[in-house]
Length: 121
Image (tube, rainbow, N blue to C red; front, side):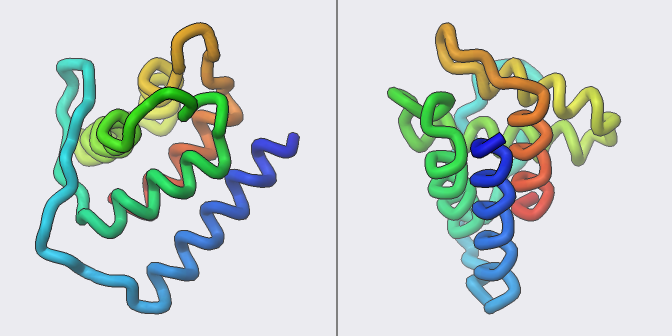
């Protein structure tokens, strides 16, 4: 339950920063997804905010993973959303992409990651 609360708090922080005008850089973030599904390039500042929020909300899922891997989760998720996949399919993809070794992402965690990602895509 505390992970979900942390994820919601991280999402609220991200939204507040975006609404405050943390902007539209022209640089694109690296997209290091490991699967063959489509990825999209995400604004670098948005990708950085996602990485920070992800690390704070999901420390076990981010442990030992570099920023590029976490940006890959965002890129893959944004690609799935852009491709018109259903929410359930996108969340299932997040479960696969967010799982860290033996630490599997729960459906609740994947849903929270989806909510964060939709604000960044």
